[in-house]
Image (cartoon, rainbow, N blue to C red; front, side, top):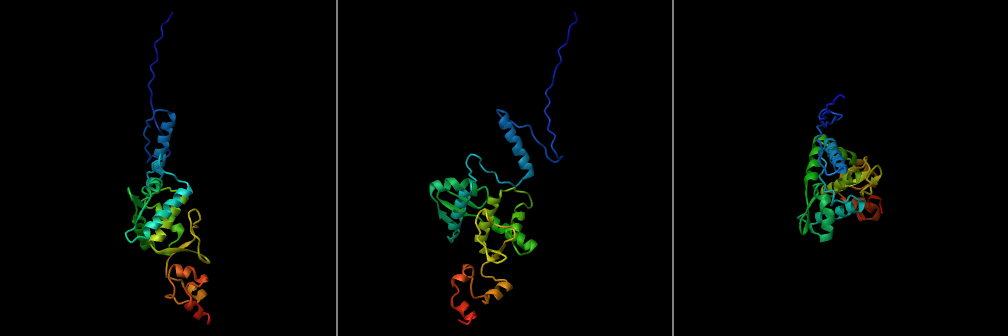
Length: 233
């Protein structure tokens, strides 16, 4: 009867990523699901290195929460100091969204707006030139590193920037109805109070007649007598 020698096995763990610049680390977790989740997080962090670090337990990315956050930021922007007293329950819902996106700080009492995106986009405009469009702003979000934001969050950032920089949205026919989830890449963001040459011709209004919301509401007679004089009324 021949004796057999037990074979000794050595466990070897290796990862073979699709690119040599991505170095995955063996994930630690209590179970397979946790390990898989952390491995996916590593892959996403490599693909979108500038993605905000949301707290998965607290953040809510449904459109109603995004619209709530936008409403609170707009109200804060109306204050000369850029702050608004916010109810506790609302703060709980918007803080996990606004702070990682660097749109506002939500303190124990107030929503305080930030200007990081305003300065960043203005710098990009100075570098690349105009006109500024929704599509350009989306592209600039991923420079110099990709963020990989969902479209609704991109819209939130763009809408806040428009409010901070006193811009309105224009399509090929005039003012556009800009809301979360409805921004189109070809829309222009025009500084309120400035009309293009074609718009001055169409409306027959001097460039210094109406500003901002006044121009957007020409059809409602906001500019009143100046518009009527242009048509000889």
